[in-house]
Image (cartoon, rainbow, N blue to C red; front, top):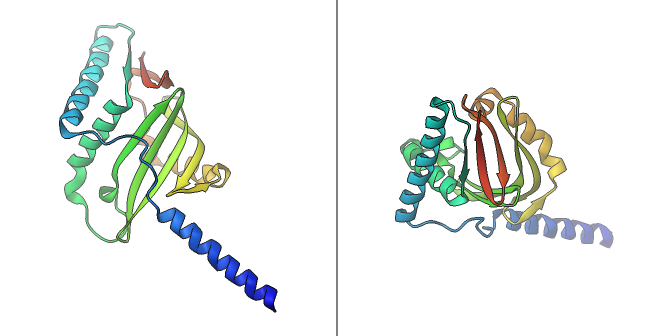
Length: 193
């Protein structure tokens, strides 16, 4: 009888600890940029993208290297453009705060924040980017919800299924003039056809 009570209290303690770790705010994967830096990095992102498109129009092969700061600035500007539609207590795409990314070697780490019934939930995922059949691919290597590590083997099948849904897959389609994307030397490299 006492072992049953001890086991029940132990299970309750583990559940409370897991919940606390899931709701804990983890360390940011990228430092927030001041508004002036966001504007400058977003302009650099746009300029590099325009150069790639111009190279394609001229029939030249080219590639561009994007820093994590440039990608984060583009995410932030995109989120600000979509922000007026956020409402309701359930998760809506408009309630998802801008993603933050960092690059290390050939790995990308992304941190996403969603508001779930009034509470911010942080999801951090690391992995490798690639391309296949004209689409961006992602293979996770590590995942956390809050500060709670989650085994990749538990979430990878659901993540891959989600990435193949038509509305998500369309967002992962490479533009016609892009041959591949990869991470190299801590930067995102976009190759023209």
